[in-house]
Image (cartoon, rainbow, N blue to C red; front, top):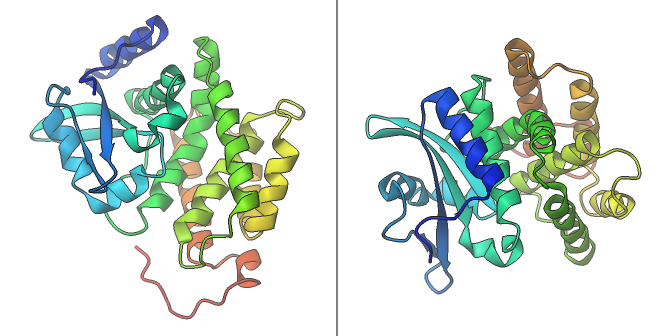
Length: 276
């Protein structure tokens, strides 16, 4: 396992720009996955291994991390201030050969922070996914534009992942109603499709959307409401961005807690959740 990843010229340049703008170092590492023990570990020489390890010991964090190719965490604590980019070794077979796209995506999240735009705070509880995806949807709008401006190919890997997601939804049963994060995750993914791809830009779009409707029809209402709200918004503006985060969070929370009109058709809420 490599302690440090070699960066392309485009990635190294963007990393340097983020560090210069924010005064915060960016550290990148791979979390190697051990199948028998179902645990992650870092190479001994990984940069700021101590900080990365703090998150890998957190059960709620790793539960979300397992669903991702990589993650960016802005660590602010007495023991250090850093942007930590961690690649998921459990899914290395999927992202191998696309390291530039995967790392660039996470640099994009650090870039958002470096510019001083508001972001959700990671809440260490069972519903952390709502905050994670609420941040992703508006941030990805700005990130895609910056990736295109820097000439970094992020679409090839993105579209391959969407094709794989469509196939999986076609062949596997829907997650149980108790898996609220699954609906939130798919709503965020579909919102990305609608906000980031023009008509005819992706040949697999109709198949993907049919697969979502077939497996999780309850997410369409939430996705369409979020997309309609964000279209045309100036997300470069801090106040607008903050309002967008609040709006998206509330809509995803409603979906997660089965309070949307569409979801009530498929499930009845039997208990009143504690919402913070």
